[in-house]
Amino acid sequence: MMALKLVLIVLISLLFLCPSFTTSAVPRTTGLKPKPGGFGGILRNNGKELVNFVKDVLEEVAKDWAGGKLNDFINGQPSQSSKQVPQSSGVYIIYFSIGNQNISAEVDTSSGLIWTQCEPCAACFQQSTPLYDPKKSSTFSNFTSLRCNSTSFSNSSVCQTVKPDLCPNGCEYLTSYSDDQNSTGYVGTDTFTFGTSSIPDILFGCGTNNYGNYDNTSGVLSLGKGPLSFVSQLGYMRFSYCLSSDPTKESPINFGSFAVIKGSGQSTNLVTNNNLTDLYYIGLVDITVGNTRLGIPSSTFTLKANGSGGVVLSTSFPVTYLEQAGYDLVRQAFVSQVNLKTVNGTYLGLDLCFQSPKTWPIVTLHFDGDKKLVLNSVNYVLNDTSTGIECLTILPSSGISVLGSFIQMDTNFVYDIENSTISFEKCGGSSSLPNLVTAMLILLSMLTLF
Image 1: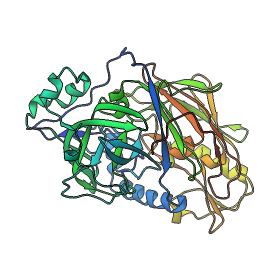
Image 2: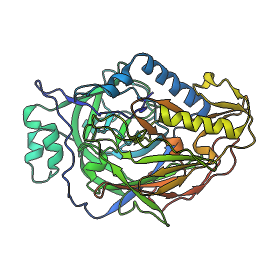
Image 3: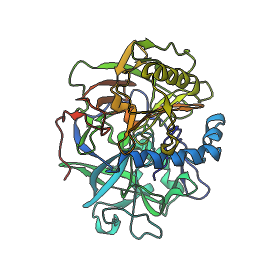
Image 4: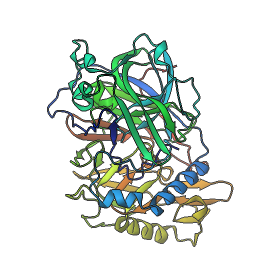
C-alpha cells in the first residue's frame, strides 16, 4: 500500500541521483500571480471494502510506530535526504493521460513529486493500465539543461529545484516512503491531459524500480505545495475537491477558476510550517462533541517552532489522528454521550468501539477565525456490518495531528495557495450509517476523463 500519510509528515524527500547531488524543496515565489483558466476532473474510490481497508492500513501504522519511524521524524529535524514516513494506499484515484497513454494515480496532497511506472521496468508492482512507455509518446522529453534553456519551457522553479545542468545525461530521482515502499527512475516532461484539457511540459518521475502496493494504480499525482507538485507546475495556485462518502459515486476535483465555493462557504488561513513546506496545515483550535465544546488547551494543536505539532490535511490516509491531549477529551466525550459499554475493536486497529449504538453525537471542528465545520457520523464512524460493531475512526498521535480523508468527505475544500487560505462548504448530504457510506454527492460542473 502506498505509504501511510499518518503524519503526513512527509517531507517529500526527493533525492536526485546526479553526481553527489541532493535537492532541497524550494517554496513557490511569494506574490506570484496565478495564470487564468482552469479545468476539472473526477476522482474515483479505490473500490476496497472499507472495513478491510482500514484494518490493513492500521496494521501498517502499528508496525511503523513500533519501529520508531514516526517518532524519529517528529522529534528530530528531518534532513532533505531522509525518507518519507510510511503511508497507506489512498482512498481516491484519478484517471488521466500522459502523452497518449492512460494513467491512473493516487491523489496525494502531501507529496512533492508526480511519478508513474515506466517501460522498460526492472521492478514494477501490479497496475490496472499498461505501463507508460516514453518511446511511444511524441511529446515526451528527458529533462536536461537544454529544457531549461529552451524558450518553450519557462517553469523556473522546476529548473531551480532539479538543476539539470548538474546531470547533463539526464536526472534520476528517488522517492522513498519506507524500506519496502519506494520508487526510483529518471525525470522527464510530457503533456498531461484531463478530459479535453491538456497541459504541456509537466515534469514527472518515470519509475523503473518501484516497490509497494498502490491499489493497482500507476503511481502518484502530487498536490502538495512544493515546486515539483502538479498544482505548482500548473501555476493556477488553487484547487478543490469534494470526496464522496459513497464509493459508487465520483468525486469532483477542480483546478484554477473551476475551484470555487458554490454557496456560502467559510474560509480560514492555512498555517505555514517552514520546516515542511509541502504540507497543508490548518488552524484547528477546538472540537465540540454533541452539545459539549471540549475546551481543548490552545497549545494542543499549535505548530511548534521546531516544526512539530500542528494539524495537516491528508487525502491519502483515511483515519484522523489527534494529539493525545485532544484525543483523550474527544474519547471521554463519546464514552459519556453514547452511554454504552465499550467493546474490543482491536481487530480493526481502532480504539473506541460500541456494539450497535442507536446514535452517535455530532462533531463540530472549530478553526481559526471562529470558523466551524459540522460533521456527520459518516465522517468519523466505521460500521462493521458483519459484527454490528461501530468504531470511532479517530486515534491518538504524538507530535502531529492529521485530518484524514474520512473526516473530509462530503465537504468541498478549496485551497487558495496564493492567498494562503482554505475555504469549505458542504457539497453533499449524509444520513444513515449502516453501510458507512450513504451520503449523496452534488456533482459540480466538470469534465469527464474517459
